[in-house]
Length: 127
Image (cartoon, rainbow, N blue to C red):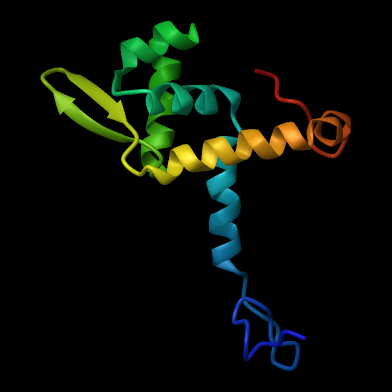
């Protein structure tokens, strides 16, 4: 049996009400950043090599301003880095674990495709 002494991630049931768990909030936010299909598509594209926002717009088939919003989110959340090259920003994935995460997510989604397709608690994305 695991208790608070051996697993600090578990709440101590004998103490005062616990404060909001910012660690779990952060992990949830980490996944929300990937929940948008356009951001996921862009992240997978940038995993294959450094890209400009124009490259990304052409690939995704959406406007430059929308691409900039999505890329800014990916940068702000730490999935992608941006470097200035003259007037352009070039985007790349700075942490190789992001690729591992995407491969694992695709594998888990494939293994659970029937359940995910039938899940009515999480709505399908609209775009």
